Amino acid sequence: MTMSDRHESLGRRGFLRQATAGVVGVAALGVSAADAAPADASAAATGAATGSGRVIAFEGPHQAGILTPPQAAAAFVSFDVIAPDRAALKELFAVLTDRVRALTAGGPVPATDLASAPTDSGTLGPVLPADGLTVTVGVGASLFEGNRFGLGALRPAQLTAMPVFPDDDMAHSTELHGDLSLQLCADSRDTVTHALRDIAKHTRGALQARWKIDGTHSAPRPSGTPRNHLGFKDGIANPDTTDSSVTDALVWTRGGAGTEPAWTEGGSYQVIRIIRMLVEFWDRVSLDEQERMIGRRRDSGAPLDGSAETDVPAYRADPQGLYVPMDAHIRLANPRTAATTSQQILRRGYNYERGLDVDGNLDLGLVFCCYQQDVSRQFAAVQTRLAGEPLVDYVSPTGGGYFFALPGVRGPHDTFASGLLGG
Image (cartoon, rainbow, N blue to C red; front, side, top):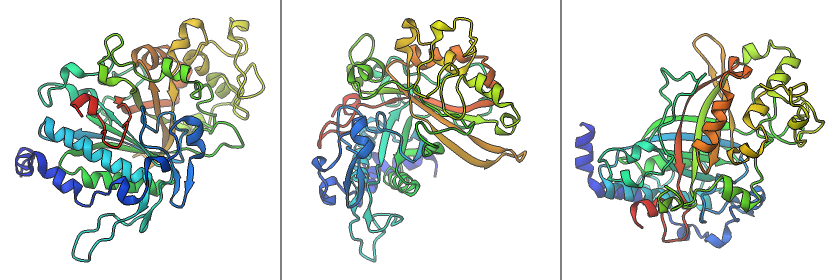
């Protein structure tokens, strides 16, 4: 059967009937929105401890998983949308909403009679732990192209296919772009896997996986910011997400402002980059050279002109780069000038490990993920400054994409993409 034949036989409502067989709503799980912890950064750090684990609120003006401090495990998955028309696309987002709401709340799995297929995979047992799960949904530029769904006029203004930047190695990559992205994060790996498996089951006939990469967020060693596979602390200079004036200026899209469609209010541009780290070569470089390439001490994370990781480098007092070299990664990425203040990004990266390549080298690296209000003003400007930096001999970006993280689901009758598709 061809894809088109399958779509015709399935019909607009066929996949929804298939998807909602066994769908469990929040009410059925016995968990209300009031039982969930607030989705701001400070509350998400502790969550609401319940019998089924840490709960991070699903509903709100913004999606969870953006300001939420990184959890221990993550999966980034890109999909092609194979729903046949706009009505089926709307049904897809409704099903996604139901599943994410239920999975992030946790609770007892509905009983299944022996003659029926189980409502749940059973990999987490008869009671689902919420386990700090967040599922962040984004859309890619290709969803708005052509006559597929009639969405061209509603495309977010900055949403394009991710370009190939200098020093990228993406000529033969199969891990690029996509119609829809899911960022699934939780306190345990098996919770992430269970959630993805559940969503794949309930959206069969509407989504086809395109590429996937898993990540881990290590515990701080010995304290402070966690480290990447190069041995350096990663993400020290993130903006203060507890300050709403900062997130309003740097993270959240202003719907209806300038060229942005009104429906984008409360969303954010998501950039995913799969960055392989050539650790065999890196491990042969002297510590002094490593630190000068990064601009920080490897042991403490302090800038080369400071003593603690929280110290702010004094670039104005070092105009010739005698302490922190002019081409150090941290100095190029964030020059800390008045002109570059609005270019800061919110990083939310994870380490990855994918075994060995065909030459027997370790395939280790970083799933770089960041959020911003304007991808051109922020990520692209930073990436352009980093072109040709000394670090490029030891890192190789191999895939990823640009996506627009949808505004949050605002109440029990709202769904993902309701502003885009009409709720």
